[in-house]
Image (cartoon, rainbow, N blue to C red; front, side, top):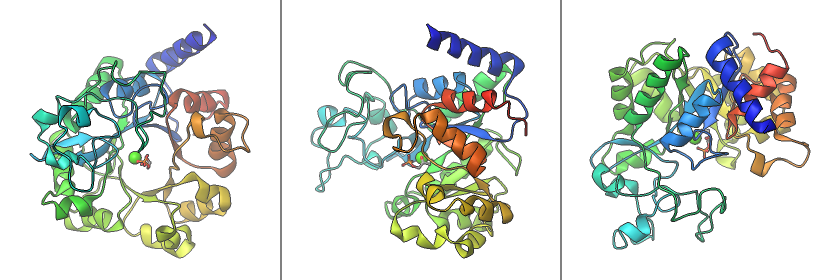
Length: 323
Ligand code: G3P
Ligand code: CA
């Protein structure tokens, strides 16, 4: 009951009074993946209702060149593709989204994310085999968010991540060109558009800035894996500042070096770390709220990717944050 009243409070605040004017942002990671199967319209809509400022779809392409929302280039971790198309796996054992048409992908059911051995991360929430969710197209997500913006008067943005653009190109698909085309079609143009384009591949972001000449906000994702060591340093950030507007670092990079946020800010880069989630809370924090508060107000980040947008919104409201 307490939880319900809190959700109602959030609803009132975001629909009526508004969480308006704050610059620290809450990004609904894979929608509201802390509550619903990731990358479904239901998850995105719930993130919107919980007060997220931006909704995050990860993007891959189908065989017929449609952008769809999926975290992996494979289908088997979050859909029933093994049962529906048992003979369509490649020799490496994976079912690739790019080998399926949109019509085929729409016949799949999305379920809770499963581990490689098939065990779901959340076995009890929406039992695998009993729930029916669809893989959304990116166009459907944009139409959902823009429609909700019209009905609520809010101006929630989108935060698409291009997954493996280099690999898509090897497969004969230019996912970068496809993204720019669809964003333009739906009116996302110029530096003030309510969109951040994120990617781990630096050459994709430089291509967006210089080959496509886009002024849309770009975010360089920075992994904690060793291949990214240069981007953990001030010189690496200076290079990023030549083509991007912000960074999306793994939060552990900031925990190890809190100066990282200041370095980025000095170079004019926004800092949106990932991922804040209740099911993998670092031991040093007593709650997700405490962790998010630390990042917002001690480390000074500008936004957080979180599976629980309501918790991050609550942190900002309770701190009476005013930009
Ligand atoms: O895009 C930020 C964060 O989502 C990157 O990690 O693996 O959840 O896409 P991942
Ligand atoms: Ca992502």
